[in-house]
Image 1 (cartoon, each protein chain N blue to C red):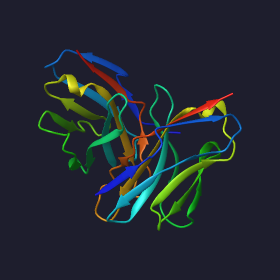
Image 2: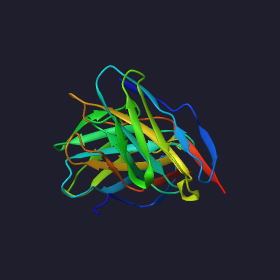
Image 3: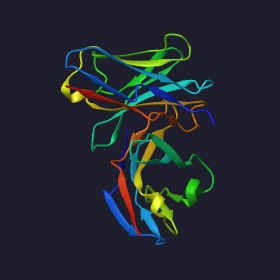
Image 4: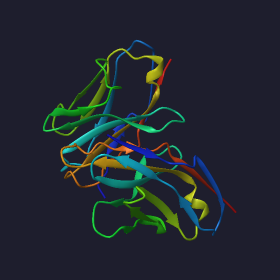
Length: 113
Length: 115
């Protein structure tokens, strides 16, 4: 069964540095998402992406965050200047049609030092 | 806007006992409903979904859930749990009719199955 893959599985970064989290969604999917889960808390929506543009974003997704689909297969989340509170598990998800469920990757654990 | 409430943060249960994990939601629009399971150090795996039709939906690993519109609930049940069901379970909703289907999650329920 096709799956969403995320790399790296764990990223350790100094505060203030830029970080890029990578995702390869399922190949024929059209809708792409990033979520995050701070340790011990619930999964929170960050951003959705469709037709090569952001379709919705939460208040968490401020100017420090950006997303790209640079080559038609990868879907990246960039945090420009990381803060301690950005430490979390970041999940990528994709779906085919709008009424189909989202498929999640295994996540990238981001640790900011 | 939607919100999801999972009243029980932890549910301990003995192996082979039945279990119910509760989920209530609120929404100003019609919703799709989902249950995801997260095993330690893994991602979110879809257990089951309600989109339309029969209010009783069956998922993987013997789980089922019933959509109750009047009570705005979508409780997850399993008649007999196994040790391997120990995991965290998340209820989620997404609106439809204009939304891009972003999922709103509950805080999760940690199911702990004891021998």
